[in-house]
Length: 580
Image 1: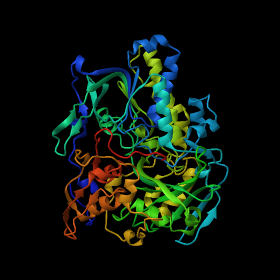
Image 2 (image 1 turned 180 degrees about the vertical axis):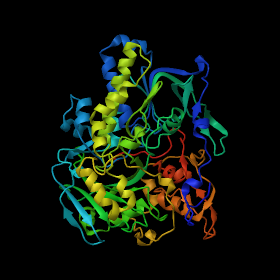
Image 3 (image 1 turned 180 degrees about the horizontal axis):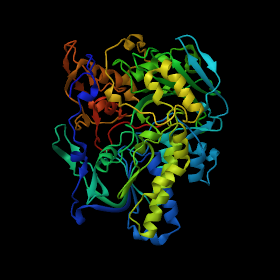
């Protein structure tokens, strides 16, 4: 495959990572029975979607002791690679409360806040255009940004709460455990294999080495969030993306600030500043600023973040640095000035919406939440879809277990008929026009929103993020120099995540070591954790060798959108998010 698009521009897709997903991440033979762990239902991922599945399934099993008993000693196992559930979870997050109220009907919203994962109902909101570094223009709130009555939450704290409920109901939660292979036998998913622990940089077993284990289950739930390590191979193995548009991705970088005075409203900005307006740069994105009142401490907090589609062409686009630049705007300074940054994190999110969602079931398994691409990126909303999909998955699995059924395909129809299918279908053509840039695509995107996807008619297509030709541009010239008090560099940001990846852990990032300068610059600037470096003596043009500081990685997943591949790290590695 040629490395350029015919006019000298370099395409990251021409330099695929050294990985064969189906060969490496699917295991086709099971260990002997006495060497494996048997559970009723295996859920891969202890985020909001996976734990909603566990919570709903266990609610139903609590009223059906006969079915519960048939599942054995471990009716439900949740396999989570972080130190605790929620440790790798990050979102804005303002959620529509309906699915949470459905899943936890005995809890009031005041109870949510007392538990420490909710921070207040949205009563006021504002949306601004930021045409320059100094100006802001308030505009009428577009329909996707109407949040009156929604709740500001922390998804990492919510997941910890859901973990507690799951364990109290009888789930076996295996934290610090990576699921590294999908068990597939005779065309059916039979469970997962956990990863080895205690290997050195070169894969050699160390003194504390523990081999992985086959974990077999009657049904398996892939709830891995964005860039599921096993979801991708499963989609290929079972051809789940047949007929769908390619998935596309966005990257969000977030900070939590303790502020001296409360913010009284939820704020979004739609740019174009600090992004470049010219379509040559391919930059589309926006920001959020959400008020958070901590009921336990009384602290006034603010969640602030910046999101950029990973469709851009300027290799020097850096979402972390764009967030720092955004904070220099007077609109933002008035909110944060005199405060203290207390949290930071980064995460990619699926942006393809309705047309990019794969088939949701395969023999023996199903997909929930972000693993299935259930995000409305027009409204910056996905958490309520994660919860709702978990409810529907739990109910589908329960019926199959009770009735001795082997198929989970009824879940497909349940999702389509639910709020998930209806809401995503209504915005099905809203983001694709923005691939043409804000000036050309903005009016078409607005038309799609107003007509609920009827205009432009038909199905609008996506192109893959890694098919965009890259150039080394000048976006980097506008980023502020970090002062360590108000604007920050990447490494100090990684430090406050609690990242505990050991220095001698195996490398979980797959990239070509020698790539064109344009690709190397893309990785270097894109990564919010400073994982990729270019040697100082590297040539200005042609191929360069890339240094990969993989122990910095916060597992945001963005690299997989632009020519690399994130694979499962050792269990327990990575960040330990608390408030994100």
